[in-house]
Image (tube, rainbow, N blue to C red):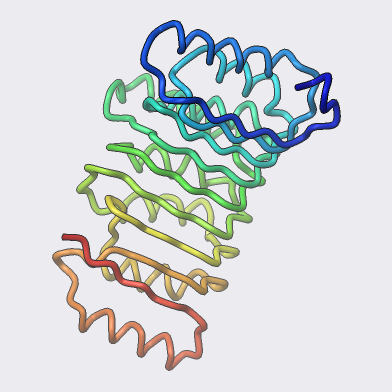
Length: 246
């Protein structure tokens, strides 16, 4: 690849479904070879890769000038991987990060690791974030990703099997970052907030134009309609999408 396209700056790698250790090793070798190349990558899209050393080597080697990163693995990614991205990719503007989980191993050490990571003010250039996973801890993950992302304008979150209301995590983020440039907000399955928080986000994010949120058991459709009337009355150009989850 390097010999044929020495000026290549955007790469997408999609791995076929893996069924044995030999195939995993081959995938690992491909990622390591890409890490060793002299290609100056600004955009990297890696899909269906297994948990392996190669992805770590690749991020460390190529992350310094990456502005776009799309990680869509075949296995779970941990909070350690997210911190690695923040440390390795200081110029990142677009991030898609799937299959995140923090359901195992979140203790004193992980809280300490996140506290140390927050001091480094990572993800400061981030503008677009799509985060999906299962049972990830919003109290750790959201401040890590958003506290320094003052220019974030599009945010999409999904957290399968998470039943907690997101309010405390959002309040913490807003205390660090007012989200003044946020234009599109998608709070999908597992990322529900209360109606008072819906109001706060709708009225306190001055550039918000599209807001999609989950209709929880404690909300009534009439409340959403009243919010729409309030938005119209104040001449705010916000499209509100309320999703019912069954």
